[in-house]
Length: 114
Image (tube, rainbow, N blue to C red; front, side, top):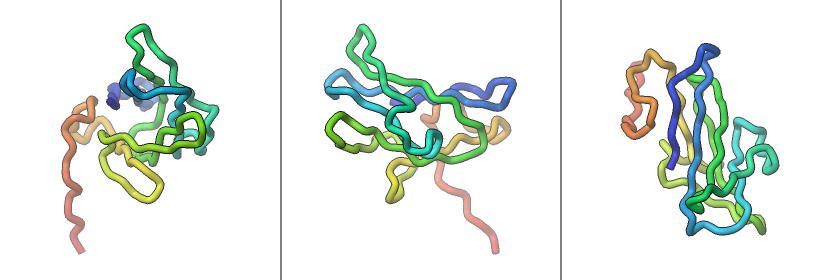
């Protein structure tokens, strides 16, 4: 699960990445927001066994990301907004775009006029 907060006073959005307890081993979320550093955002295991980590990013941008599990196993999140060769893509719209902060209302890209 991926949740997005509303932008704070600095126009930063908190992305919270959560994986189910069934996923085992040390896991990190890596991506454009941390220069793909596997040590920057390790996930912690909560009392319920789920893995989670929060990452602050600026609003109005898109970020590629993946999860890295112990042993060099990479995997993607099915809740990403889109995918490219780097992994999942998250769009963090500006607050004025009218989209909700939860990210649950994925919208198709708007056509570009020539």
